[in-house]
Length: 364
Image (cartoon, rainbow, N blue to C red; front, side, top):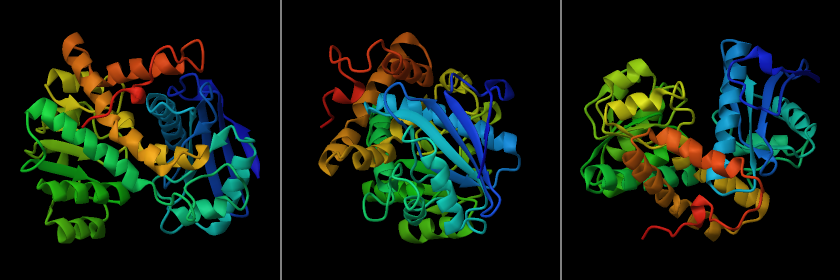
């Protein structure tokens, strides 16, 4: 195993990251980047994404953005956890092996508990089982939480319902929702939406995923390059990040954006473009935090009832973000960032003089 420290001067996406390392293992083919953004609130927690990045620079940039998002996500979710992320440069369908995942486990072990890993895109519970043969600092195991996607989808669904009530003055029944990416999270979100009577349009780079959604939920299927510009009530990005850039925002016809993908904004300022077009953006790391709560339940020994109760409280936090955005005429992403930073950088790690967002009363 070879490990190289990556310095802040190498990438513009560095933003106060504590440590970034590139791990390679010639025998297994492992090429992994672990980015620890912050451990101010606790050990850095965040999943492992396996994806065939075209360049090392692309992989490093993704790890940096994802790890920072995890710091904000965990802070806003009221968890005593920092933010970190790992990416493995490989095709999860053809290049992933148990030996590679065990090698990744050995890399995780070198952080001595400062980084805790779990599933992300391209990973499943059995991969984490392989990682667990080499380190204790892993969650999402088959015998415990397993796939956290249903928890993620539940949080997105609840926030989407709140956004529809706040913005459109109605529930989800009869609304048209476009879901981009119908893998684990997207498919479960479709199930929840279909049960409410919402009308679905889906797209996925894997045709079999889109066909399954069509068969299960009578969803219409369109091409991935078309779905963001459809005339729908809600656009739900549930694939990879970067869907909301200047060009895509200009084509958006949905009135609400609420989905399970991380890093939906290509750049930090793109939420201002959404505000200018009167499109309600539900900050991704707020609404999709159900998965990390499930993982935190495993790591911190929370009861499942407590985990689910915290997820049910997500709409209360989103309501505060939406109300502040309207009052202050500032983008919702900027408001959410302010709230997360207030928790992340407050003088004392444990400050009970004011509630964390998820201490707020829960919605009925």
